[in-house]
Length: 187
Image 1 (tube, rainbow, N blue to C red):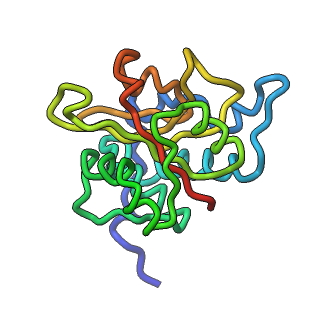
Image 2 (cartoon, helix red, strand yellow):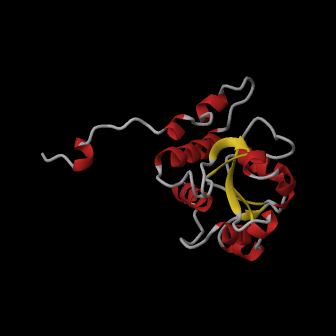
């Protein structure tokens, strides 16, 4: 049986950036008095899996979101949709209804409640909202509570490294969070 070139290469040590992982879903479960529901844990684990195993997902928010949606059989986005396009879809009630999603407007508590029930929540803001060249999208995940009124999320970051199971105040400036829109789908 022939071995591939990939299999015959010596293993290279992980990059320093690969070693600095945010707390895993299992670590988050260790919070006393808090356990994610099975559906919520599935979304958390899917985000972590995409972040850890799919090349490029850490460094591209729209790619990350689309891959998580793909893995949960709930991807309504086209390959060409960037963060601005995804956010515009989130804000379009007709598009959401046509694709089986429910708008949550700009209500972080509704997003947190939906995540707690194990639903998939995509959130976003356009480049215009953020006063920058590109928008930003995330997947909201369940957590023990809100931080400064906002849920936790997982995301890729264009030109950098995203995070999993982190405060949305890390994904967006606190002043920009009221501009973030949410949509949800049962998975």
